[in-house]
Amino acid sequence: MKKCVTIAAAAVLAIWTASAQEGQKAGVYLGYDYVRFDSASHVSAFTANGGNAQFVFNFNHTIGAVADLGAVHNNNSNGIHADTTIANFLFGPRLTLGHRSRFKPYFQVLWGGVYATSSVPVLVNEANPDITGQPITARVGASQTAFAMTAGGGLDIRLGKQVSFRPIGLDYYMTRLQNLRTAGDNNQNNLRYSAGLTFWFGGEKAAPQPPQAHRQVQMKTCPDGSTVSPDAACPKQSFSMSLTAAPSELCPGETARLAPSFAGVSPTQLSYSSWSVDGQKVSQVGSYEFQSEGRAPGTYTVKLTAGGDAFNPASAETTITVREYRPPTGTVQASPAQIRAGDKSAVSSNFQGQCGGPIQAATYEASEGTMQGDQFDSSSMQWDASNNAEQRKSVTITAKAADNRSVGSANTAIEVVRAAVAIPVMSVRLPDVLFPAGNSRVNNCGKRILLEQLRAYYERDSSGTVVLVGHSSNDETNARLAQERASNAAAVITAGTGVCLSIPATQVQVSAPGADQNGVSYESGFCRSSVGPVGPNTDMRRVEVWFVPSGGQLPSSVTNAQSASTLSLGSRGCPK
Picture 1 (cartoon, rainbow, N blue to C red):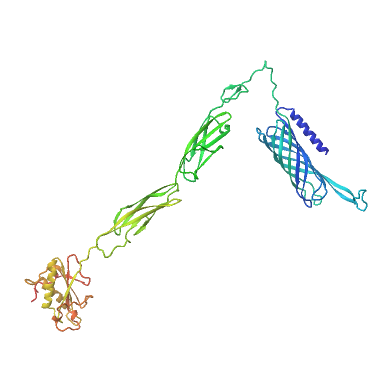
Picture 2 (picture 1 turned 90 degrees about the horizontal axis):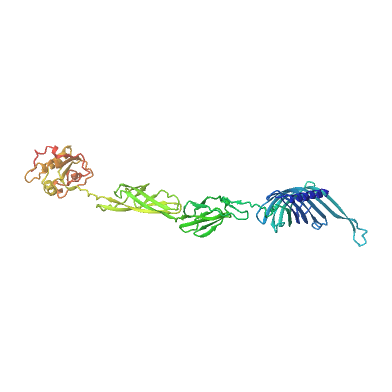
């Protein structure tokens, strides 16, 4: 305890010295303490009440030193009549904030020691009570000194120039008292609450006023260069500023940062600022971000007004445009826009949107035919096979392009034209010219076919071609019999005069496949009986007669045909 008295005396001496010095300030705090001591092995947690005194020495408005002396007491811990007193003597630095404010929060870390003493009643003689009838007891106690520290802070509220009220001081309170029952459990993590008053001494002293007759007024120089009397306020300065937004155009959900620029003042010299959007205040902090979310499309005016104790207020404004979302829209073109059936056309498109992000490359679809990338192919289109006239179809091409929110489309048409289909000119099959077995002479019935029926076709189309195909039966041994039959039939229509038909030999084709019928059926007409009784090979001994109109093609069954002009038919004349 002598050590505590010595420390307290030293603290009081320091305060007395500080109070006599200009520009320094010292204080004495007196207050109430409430401590919650943490439990240890075999010792339950308990609370204690008491008081403490703090001696404060401030080096300046922020940094100071503190001496903390106090004691708390408890006489009943969880039903045990233990008389416990714990005193602390701590020292360390303090950090105080709010120089110009009535409210001064502080933070401190203190180190030092703790002195603890505790005693409990012990039964001495239960058999012989005292004169009151109570058993005779005695108290057994122990004490120790150990390391301690606190870390925490509080709030001082200035009530006057010399007095401050502390409604709360809260510290982490660590002690290293030995647990007598368990030697290894020596650290206690406690909590201390305090409240009280601080009395301040010293501080800056006002300079003595010189006699009125001899006082010389020292003028004050203002920031703008002008001078005023010490008691007069300097005239407020003016400054200018500008305001920019980045970016100045926003899509829904985007943010613009407002950046002010100042001329004639530093932002740190300004004490207040006010932001407004279209005249409505939105913020009073130094920076502001314009949010487009939830705002209707349009142009907004953002204004900043700022000023300070030594500066006249100034303002600046800028505009920000919130754009509306527009889905992709565009056009699609086909080149060429009209093609023939089976041809291709190149397709291109152009899409634009707003506030939906990048627009992807367009894809194409066709109502008929196929799309291969950006090429339309009409070769797979279906047409009416029964209609040989010109046919036209309009194919719809749809282009689709997507942004991050939706898909836009555009259409165009391609006209596909299928040309008229020419009707093939068909060859005309006349009745066969028939021959008896082993004979190649054209009989009268055959002449009627060649000179009457064939004449009718030739007179209608004199540029047509006559095809004569000679055959022989398997039982005929003359290999040239089929050729002779076809040649004699050709002579009837090329070498004759008078009633005989005369067709230019260059318009007559002759073929002689012999016994090979080439799949052509037997066509006897009215001449079947002109060759005698019908035998098993009668239908093979014949000459096929065909008339091919202008532009027509030879029958597919005709092979190895040659022009009658290459044969010696003039000497045969028109057979009788």
